[in-house]
Image (cartoon, rainbow, N blue to C red; front, top):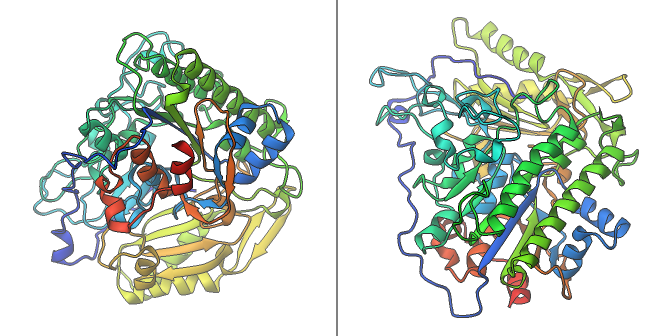
Length: 555
């Protein structure tokens, strides 16, 4: 469960307050072409959020004639691919399009904290105390309740394909953190510290497009703010027909995803996402699916049980239905590529921003993290009267990321000791209770150890001051509406499918069992397009490799 930030006076140094926090990095102006060979003209990236490699394996076995089975059997399958930690949507997405982990991208979660930025709404930047919530989610929308994020379209939801392809115009700067140097709001694209495949492709004169779940995915535009020609971002957490948002009912999630599928079909057909204007098929484009993720999280929906069958090896009826929807959608995209004569010049990459855990419903323990955070603050206040609440911010899904108002070794060590010393009681799927040691965590890193875990200096203003890795099966939530989550370091959070296949979905595929990371997708996209992978700044910083087996198969 994500906590809203408790704004407090941040006990930082003058140097911290003056730290340069808005990245100056920009896209490389002239990406050199890679060594000559037959480059693909198009790369279609598909992220099935929540999907595990085991889900793809099961579906391909159970549905041997399906589009997903043909994709797996015709492409190069990397069966031990893993996402970055934290396994959240934002770092998962930035990995795919930058080639970097949070230490390079500066992106740790969609809702995080920055010790050097100023709170949203700050106007007197010379005298404001640093420390700000960085919430790049639906709360940035001009109207979070509307599918068009406040654009004002009539006839929603049917008219949603008319939504702008420039969603930064739909963000409310009043809700953004403020740069202390410029005293200007920090847009999501400005928060990203390295460039993206979209920026590199555009600098080479190629067209780009992407579809995702919030207007805050302006992030993928990269520091230039203009990496994506056509960015379609209907708001998934807006009001859906019949009540709730589009994630509270899986049929609604599929309806929502179908809008993005249609956008991609229009783009394959050489039009913009609306289908109205002929612009040419993008060189790099794609979408994310949410249907699998909500089917994994919801206990029940549409009269079907969510998640997995006991034991966690086979999807339950709701998840199986969601996988059918994704399969049919991939089949539609393949058919459109074939109809437009683009299948042989297109590579499809199927993966996921993140997985989900737990799969076995018997291991689920839902723990309310509110009392844990309150206990930390109460204990600190007892020995530090008058001090600000110690927890400045926390993002807790199936792990804990905590930013503290006091970054001293004593303060962060106290948080670690508290978490390890206190048990936590949660509820199970069957309605019982279960008490776990160490606040439901298996390991806690604090202060310099947290910084080392991410590979950044302790003075870095972005990284969490305390990191708690959840015990398997733990989901931090105060209710019973979720049976799975992501964001942590569990293998089920991080092991995702990664298949690089020809657009024809025909050919002799093979499997690579060596460990790879989803960061390797970004340089592979550029190599497939005949562009230089090292044009990506994160690739240079982290020495991220391409997926050579996939490139060899694509030749």
